[in-house]
Image (cartoon, rainbow, N blue to C red; front, side):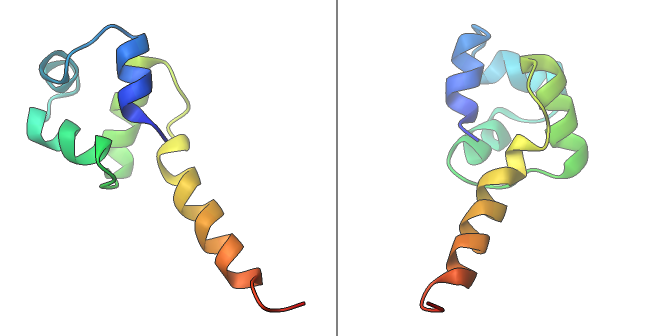
Length: 73
């Protein structure tokens, strides 16, 4: 998920989002750069920016699923 995109749509800075969620700005930055949050943190962020929390993990599942099918034709 592109947290940066959704955070900007919500018109929030990293600091503002971090404060609302109860985590550090550094953690928001790490998630924006590809780190996966805990399920609890994903749910909190999702509630603030109004997205489905599953989106934080969807990209990872799609990539691993694509890799399993390569070279099997």
